Image 1 (cartoon, helix red, strand yellow):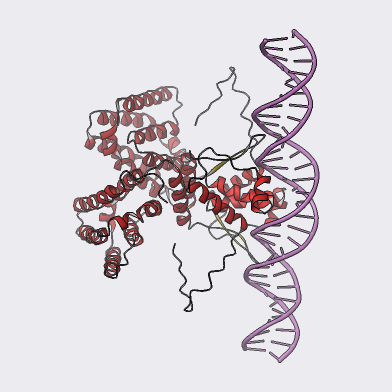
Image 2: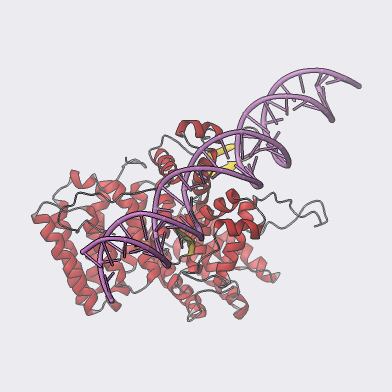
Amino acid sequence: MSDAAADTGADLFKRVSVDRVSQVIVDQIKLLVREGKLSNGDRLPSERDLCQRFGVSRVTVREALRVLEASGLIEIRVGARGGAFVSSPTRERLGQGLADLITLSSLTPAHITEARSVIEIGILPFVVERATGDDIASLRRMIEEGQEALDRNAYTMNISAAFHVGVSVCAHNPAIETLVQSFHGPMLLSLRQAQLVAPAMGRRGTDEHAALVDAIEARDTEAAIAVMTTHLDRTAGLVRDMPPAAP
Amino acid sequence: MSDAAADTGADLFKRVSVDRVSQVIVDQIKLLVREGKLSNGDRLPSERDLCQRFGVSRVTVREALRVLEASGLIEIRVGARGGAFVSSPTRERLGQGLADLITLSSLTPAHITEARSVIEIGILPFVVERATGDDIASLRRMIEEGQEALDRNAYTMNISAAFHVGVSVCAHNPAIETLVQSFHGPMLLSLRQAQLVAPAMGRRGTDEHAALVDAIEARDTEAAIAVMTTHLDRTAGLVRDMPPAAP
DNA sequence: CTGGAATAACGGTCAGACCATTAGCCGTAT
DNA sequence: ATACGGCTAATGGTCTGACCGTTATTCCAG
């Protein structure tokens, strides 16, 4: 991180940075968004327009836009009235990026599961404190749907994931919600086959989900934590010692 | 995820995808990496070479490489023997991406602080359980450096952030470490000025850091949680009701 | 009023060119 | 023999100008 200038004595000679021009543009636009001078839904000038404003060629502008798009900051539409639009519903993209990187980095499913349990258990005090009647009704509805799916033998990990995200919504903190949501993308990657290994997990899973909602409704934090701990530990057992990449 | 064809009856008529050519290339290379046919450190063919193989122009190849680079999958070096290298040490980039998205979504510092406290408190059981003697020595060293910086009136939020990351390292779970690291980027953005508001925070902060290490060394989880809770609550008080963007 | 064709704005792609950076090679001078 | 300095080729970075496909709008014909 801090590679300070510890050279021949003087810390003159700043590190000469030959940043790409396109990268400078990326930073500039990022800054505009960060400062709020560009908000969600705003439309950037057209590529040809940006060329003139920045005094660079269209290729350079386009590369900058590609980076911004890959980072999830903008969304590009073609055709008349098209162009680059600032987009903030970047949850899915964040999850996708997380999934990519987790798949490729040396993180094992066990590591991820543990991190996930830290979060999902840690939020329970807030969930218990803040869950509204509507929240709880919504969770119960999800459980019902899950049970129906089980009866039809169509229970998927997505249903379970949706429930867990639903629980996080009860914390009424979008940062927490995003966090939980992001972790379920990578999980699905390695769990899709875990389900095959343990088809009975769906039934026990929904039972535990129901118990969790009961605890939340009773405002019983300790019970909620106990249920969630059991629930996640079982998942942890399934993915333990699985290799980092599971195609 | 699964946008199956539920159209007019027949599932002929595949969704006509006018995917960008560059996006197809991105997907193809991503797949190669995921399948392990390209591993960390491998060098992709040169841009001009890829043009011929894919049968597209250099602009298209370059846009694909920009996306892959922004996603953290490759690293590009210029000059002779340069080119695109598959890179896996993507922690920093992942953290950067997380930080970007957190900063740019409509999350307030209060939201982020709360999510952060969930994580930093939630990991303490693991930290207390797994911290080695070296870990604790390292933490104490950080505290000393912090105190020296305080004496020189040069205490920055980076020093505090480094300590918190150091604590997360003790959990011996790279996923958790990445998570904590990611959250300190956005925090710094809004806290850099909070330090000016409360210059005494540095002294109290390091005192609490020391108390935390004591608790960890004594394997006293409850005490550690109590110290961390107090520590974070004070920060939370500072950033409460701050606006989303703080330039 | 309605349906469809023409239009203009815009992103996507291509081709070829030139510049800047860099690793390795090679020759010269000590 | 060695060390320094320039040369060269490989490679990414940028530019120019053009053409194509997509799309919202406009406007005319029925």
